[in-house]
Length: 113
Image (cartoon, rainbow, N blue to C red; front, side, top):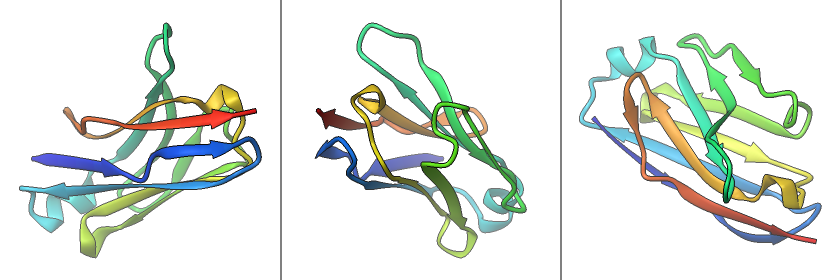
């Protein structure tokens, strides 16, 4: 299984970004049945949970992003997303997507004040 994360970039505070994570090497039914997660790791900090989505699309979020981030999934495309709005400098981090024990390489999000 491979996970390819994309969509990171540099934005100013208050801006938005949409991260995408595409899975390959996995059959659709297995993808559909797995929870998907986003984590992030800021410079000098430990990796932390951001959001998750169950196989039926029930989402959960870290308190720090609730109301600003929205996770969704497209099972047919074996792809999931993280819509990030009202970004703050504290959201600056490398964002990682994961499925079961598989992790993508991460995509960097930089938010300037």
